[in-house]
Image (cartoon, rainbow, N blue to C red; front, side, top):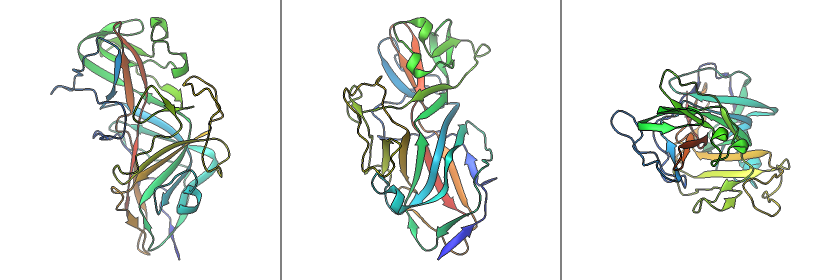
Length: 297
């Protein structure tokens, strides 16, 4: 028997920024900070780190649901029940310190007395981030210099670390800051253990109840998505979707009952912004991770 959930997420869908960290679920490392929330990471050479306190993260979801096990490409349509499912993507924006409503999700049914251990999002492969970071020392951006650096709106494909005019980060004073959406298309992920190797999946089945990140083409019934060689980060592929599975309450899950009236769902950004640097300056800010938490109402 299924329970009708009539909550339309006008209040239950809290769009918040998560300020805690995602542990080992990334090949990158967190930027280090002092007690004043200034980045203390050595950025004098080539490298990158993940900003702890990003301003915002934006994704677009075609499907969103709850699953009885960790969803992969070959099982998510059978082990998941969908709260939202449409050819029109639902835009989800997480902003620091902001709780906002999400329109477009109507009433839905979920099977009662079934344990849902994971959530699933079928996302568009395009996403974006806004970042604003403070450093202990002045840094160089695309045109300016200062202790604050922010995303300037340049798309990832048009960024060149060797050409300052094509950097996606600007630096200056706090008063000069004007963070913009930096967008990125995920044709390929980096390998989970070696960031220099392109991959199509970044899965962490033993972490926090299990995480999956899988790129798919338009054929959602395919057991797996495969790209033609060469496996190049800049190559054009037929990627369309990003399948993202996340554990609910570290995999302990939730069970819908006849008394369930709604779901409290938080789309969160943990390490939402990657800051890249070289000997010249801060040359890139680009989208990184996100998380979800779900509780019954």
